[in-house]
Length: 170
Image 1 (spheres, rainbow, N blue to C red):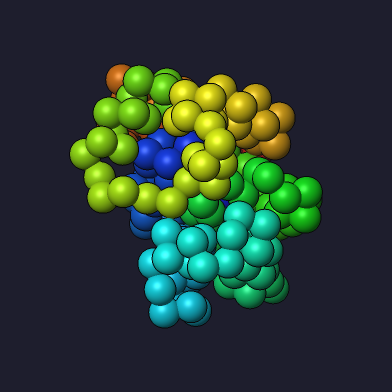
Image 2 (image 1 turned 90 degrees about the horizontal axis):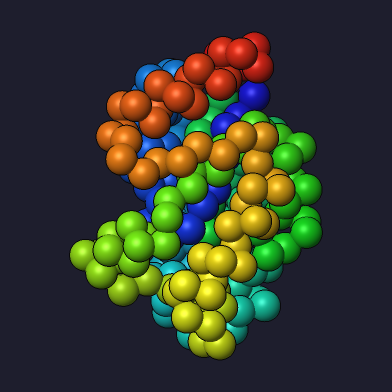
């Protein structure tokens, strides 16, 4: 079984994902890294070049190409993965889905401290509006939502491991 971590940019999907994969002895795949490697460009550059709709298609293809037929992976997709029905159905089919919920204020603070990143929907909405729009979408897709606020990476990984143990997937 695979594990997919979903949530807003800045939620810690890649950071937690790498640690979770190590703890579980699983492989780790960052879909943004797959996109960058395939296209030889940064995420923002790809998004600017092709637009949001085509970007979401490329994200789906990267997800499928990097995970199809594979098992024992921790998958970290971009936060926009929830916008395509095919993506939602695919990750539900191949994995346990964990939503890393991070309050807006924390997301905002973390993103200010990082290099600018491409966020689908930012052309029409504020970061707060995106957070408010996406949170219920993440929650409805997830097998479990973990509130990351005030927890270190080790505690979050332990909470995920506990959930997976109860599910019989560890």
